[in-house]
Image (cartoon, rainbow, N blue to C red; front, top):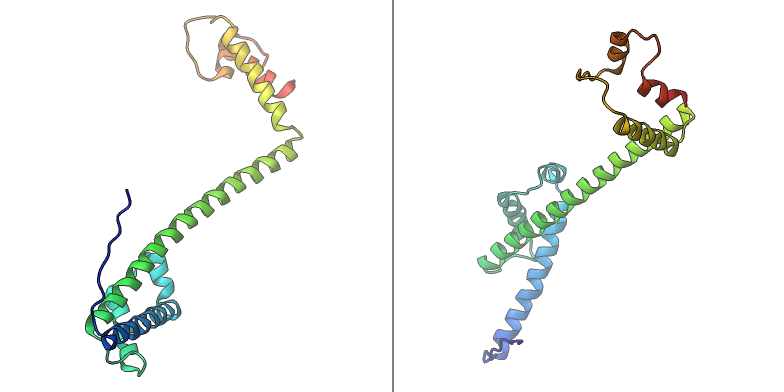
Length: 177
C-alpha cells in the first residue's frame, strides 16, 4: 500500500518566493562547493584517504560566504550544504574504492593470463596438452597399488631407494610423452 505525505502550503506568496529563492541559491552553493572540492590542491590526498573532513568543506564554504552570491543566507543553509557535500563525497569515494579494487583484480587476472600464454608459447606446449597429461598421470597414480609403506613425497628419492637408475614414473611421464 502506498502512502503519500500531504501538507498544506498556507504561507503567504512572499514567504513561498523567499523559500524558492533560497532553494535555488542552496543548489548553486552545493554545486559550487563540489567544484571547489574537486579543484582543491588536497583533492588527491582526500581521494587516496577516501575521506574529506567536514572542517575542510566548512573552510571552502566560508570562502564562498564572503563572496556576494552566497552571502546573507541562514546558517542552516550553509550547514546543510556542507553536510550534503561531505556525504556525497563519502559515497563517491566508496564507489571509487570498489571500482579500483575491481580494476586491480582484472589487472591481476590479465597478468596471470599473459604469463600463462607466454609460458605456453615458450614451452611449445598447449595448456590442453598439459592438462591432459596431468589428468593421465593423476589417474595412473590413483589406480596404481601402493608398493610399500614408505610415504615419501619426493619420487626421485623413491627411485634412489629402489636402486633403479630410471627417472621416476611421474617425472618421465610428465615431460617425455
